[in-house]
Length: 175
Image (tube, rainbow, N blue to C red; front, side, top):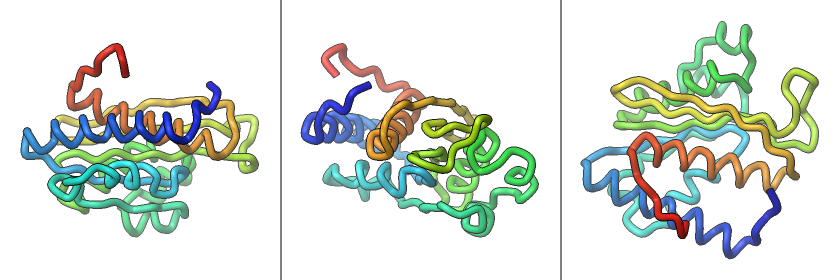
């Protein structure tokens, strides 16, 4: 996917965040984020919407395994067995953020933005996003094929889309 341009992409992401804000406030829910490869981009997009403090409690940027363990409660065994970029770690990050921040729902993202850091087993662009709420969790794997900047934007978009899906927000065909 080509980068559609900073203005168009920003408007699209903020519109998605507005839909999430409306649904969460209407339902009296709160949201927390746990981010690695996006470096806080998901939280940034959420807070571009006025009134985000009505539902967004905050998040953790956990680039290191140490912070994933200490701040999000990710079991060191999960990291040792599956690695930081895995479905298991994404789920643990989302569940940890939800529990530690007292949020109704949490979303996490972990991946390899690039241009380095990839391997045959986990190439640049591999990203996992997960959500957790009282009903359980869901996780998705994505493979992006772009530069670091676009990989981060696509990962943030995927995280917001998973939150919207979990909230059962139906977007119009124009979006």
